[in-house]
Image (cartoon, rainbow, N blue to C red; front, side, top):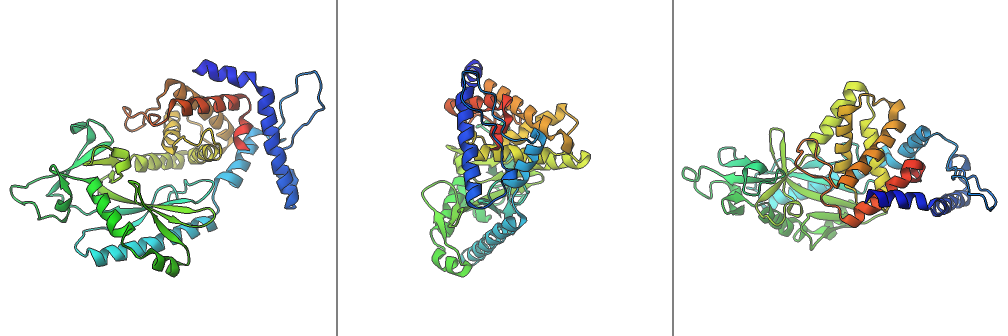
Length: 389
């Protein structure tokens, strides 16, 4: 597979160059139409046709380090105004949902709903088009036990279960959550189905839309609890039930644990983001900036778009075990190193989790997706600027 990526990448420099030239010329035309400053746009060294093999396109007079910084601040990073607007809107919807649940199910033991995910952790890139609302379940420690995935019949490290205990002393019905028991375990699927009927199908969304001055509608028909706020771009809000015990966070996301109706997903995201923040704080590093740059590159490139963010975060965590210099001046070196490392992982078909090494974070990618990513990244090894257009 890797040989075919190399052959494709080396066999078509002219075609790649023509494609890039077309993209850049479109950007120049767009800037001219809007009266923008053309000095900040990539500069092409266009030569007359000849029999001599054309030189590589000079995408920009800037160094790669400068291009990466330009890309980060103009394409990857979100404006604080946009982040505050989306967070405020998500919190307004959060308040509406929490109030409705309290009225409809006053005995349901829930904690304070809150925002979570990359938008809250300053890891969202390109567009603020997704937010997470966390719905914390309050379960009795004397009645429920969180069982690690490795200790269950599923033997999957990310598929935990929540067992009902002490039934001989506290029979079924003593806990509110007993109504979602399936086979002696708390069923995430049953809980999500209840929330879907209660929140997604029952709440008066036209009235809420009028109150919030935006069109809010539930996204029905799938396993996720999701809302869409119409706009440009549209905003999607995921509603995620969570169970917490010390530093363990389990999420009720049946789409991640199918076909097991009783399984809860162990979220590694809090551990990964906390570790990246700790490392950056210890040496004033740029790991989070590298991650945001990689995420933006993948989000903006159709061939790389299927790449989830978790493999990118874990790639940087693994690399941090071997590389100590993560200063701002090392951005160019670390970016190119990440591209090389990612090609290697794609070649192997596996990138193991930093915290759960038996978990392959590339397992959800198809062979065709891996091929497309491998080809694009091989092209970028000699022309890294193609990822920054």
